Amino acid sequence: MDFRNRDVVSIKDFSKSEMDYILRYAKKMIPYARGERHADVMHGKILASLFFEPSTRTRLSFECAMNRLGGRVIGFADPGATSQRKGESLADTIRMADAYSDIIVIRHPQEGSARLAAEFAASPILNAGDGAGRHPTQCLLDMFTIVMEKKRIKGNRIVLLGDLKYGRTVHSLAYALSLFGAELVFVSPESLRMPKEVIEECREFGVDPVSTSNLERAIRDADVLYVTRIQKERFPDAAEYNRVVGTYRIDADLLRHAREDLIIMHPLPRVTEIDPEVDKTPHAVYFKQAFNGVPVRMALLSLIAGGRKI
Ligand code: CP
Image 1 (cartoon, rainbow, N blue to C red):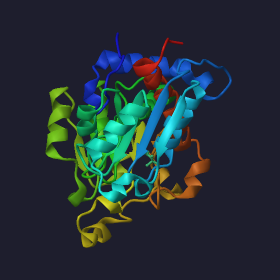
Image 2: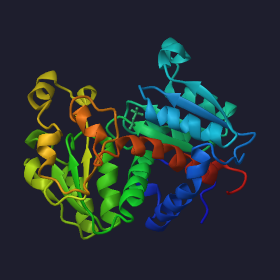
Image 3: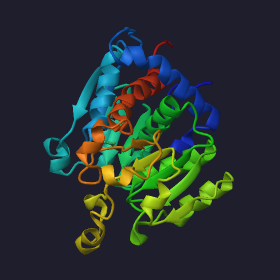
C-alpha cells in the first residue's frame, strides 16, 4: 500500500483497506506517541502548520506527532500575524509554505480551501478542517478510538448527537462508519438534521440511519454516543443559534438510561453539552480520544512523508 506524497483532503481519499491499514499502523505508534519509544522517521523533514482558525487539539497533536517522530515544525496559529493582513492570497501563502516545508497541514474557515491548497502545493496537504466541510484526520482518530475501546466498528450502535447540519466531523464520520458496517442513529434538533446527501451515502453502504430528536430513547441501546458542540461560528443567523443552543446536555440523570458499557466521545472543544461530572465516569473517553490524535497523526505523517516505516 503506497501513501507517499498523497494529499488528505477528505476521508474519501482513502479506501476501506487503506483506512484499516492506517488504524493498525496507528496502534503501533502508541508507545512512540507517549514518548516511551523513539523513532526518528521524520528526521530532516519540516511540517508547515497553517492554522487560519482557532485550534487546540488538531494543531498541538500534529505538532506533537511531528516532534515525536524527530521532525521540525514551522507555521502560524494566527493568520493576523502573516502577510494575509497585507492582502496576500491563500494560493500565494500556500506556495510559500510549499517552498519552506515537506508536508503542509492547513485549517481554514472556507469550505474547499484544502482542495485549493492541494492544487498550489507540490508537497502533500493534510486537511485539518475546512469550514463546515471536512476534517478527515479527526474522522480517523474517532474510528481509531472506537476500535481501541470496542475492538471493532462493525455491529456497534453509534449515536451521533448535536449539530449534524454544520458539524464537519459528523459528515465524514457517518460516511466512514457506514463503510465499516456500524448501525447509526442521528439525534439533533429538527433544524440541525444530518444533510440528505450524507444519509444517501450511508444507504449506499446498506446502512439505514434512524433520525430522531429523542436522545433519552436513542441512548438506551447505544454502544457509542458521539456528542458534538452546537457551533456558534457556523450559524449564518444568531437567532437560529439561540433557538437550539442547550437543547441537549449529557449528565448523570440522562446516563441512568444508558448501558454500563456505553462510551461517550466528543471531538472537543465542549461548551455546555457534557456536564463535567460525566468526566469521572467510565463512559467518558473524550480525553483519551483527543490523545489518540497523536498516534493517528504520527501514522499519517510517517506514511505520507516519512523516510522509513516503524
Ligand atoms: N477536535 C478538534 O478539531 O479540536 P480543535 O478545534 O481544538 O483542533
